[in-house]
Length: 429
Length: 59
Ligand code: HEM
Ligand SMILES: [Zn+2]
Image 1 (cartoon, rainbow over the protein chains, first blue to last red):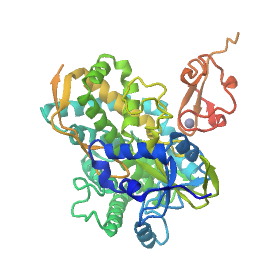
Image 2: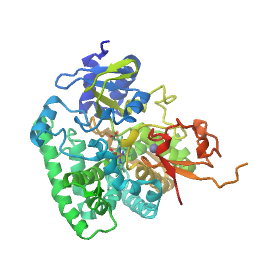
Image 3: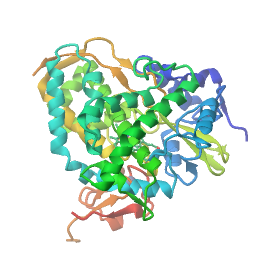
Image 4: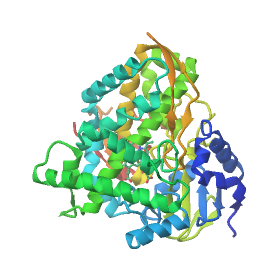
């Protein structure tokens, strides 16, 4: 059995961050719609990259991510990486596939042991207790945003900042350092976007990407090292204290894993939510009927939030590697093969979502895979939902109408991707 | 008829809650379905974990 191949000219744009910055990701949506139809599970051989199975179907992504023992996260780069980038990384780290060793980059038993350290703090019943402080933060950001007047950029002024403040406060990072964390997050996730990348980085040079990762890791390391030591001496009520004193098999967690844990919380813990929030506003601004409906019926807000996550799918892809031969959708996956999981495609899969390109706050069921699936499913999902629910509950009653003040813009990133600019005009209620 | 109070169970992997009182009508599990009556091959709707990963949620 030979594996079907996707014509290189068809798939190559999906490997290029710039493609994700076009319009509202139309090119990507068209590309994956075509793949779901003609190449639902097939191999991409893009020059400079190892072959990857491109997994486009909702059911296939769920089948893979449910089986962590077969489809590993730690053996290869967890995100799409060129051969050169992977090689540079191995040279740099002395043979490891990534600088960071976050939950995302672990397999069991390591993964389950590390995840258990913070999991109870992310259960819905624990997150619900944060509601008063989240609501207070939301109100403050809304007041500040509305004070800026017409044409203000909802993405950069509110959506980027509000989720960052919430998660960084939980971690224990003081407010004066939030901007630094926001910048580091952008350097890491949107390393190829001319507006958000590290100033001075040559975004076309793979060496520079490794350099950026190195700078980001070391910035985080020097920041969190002293915080970890302080919290080990004197724990307080924050996430850093939980991680700094976390035990793995009865022993302290190693320091690289502690730092990585804090890095993922202080990057993935807000950028994804920012993208979803900004996309939510963009959708409201272009669809007055949806705006009025959700504003007039606050009971629709949770469904609206869920649909914004499906719609935005800010995490475009993660990669898994097969540890054994496996048959999926009639295709023979071989041990060692790489599988690129397209969450954005899974969330537009016609076989899983009727009328997938219709934004419907009342969609039910809406079991999207925007947060992933399986044991690596997003740790922060309940926090992200609550943050967004509260924001819309507080903001919508204050608006009578909203529209785009200028065209919105998407970030250029093939990994975490969402709007980087959503300028709006509005009338107050 | 079973007069025991309804209980809640939680997926230890993802935090999803199964509430016996509510069931999951969107997936054909009627309100009032006891945990014991949820099929053994049922998977967590959020993360796909097997039923055995759910534990009783104490208030
Ligand atoms: C709308 C917002 C968010 C989206 C769409 C999102 C998406 C995702 C996805 C797709 C994964 C799966 C990774 C995999 O398969 O390996 C993931 C994992 C993760 N997310 Fe989120 N996320 C969001 C918000 C958050 C927040 C607020 C936090 C706060 C701490 C967070 C922390 C994490 C962590 C720690 C993991 C790793 C879990 C593991 O590997 O066990 N995320 N997220
Ligand atoms: Zn679950």
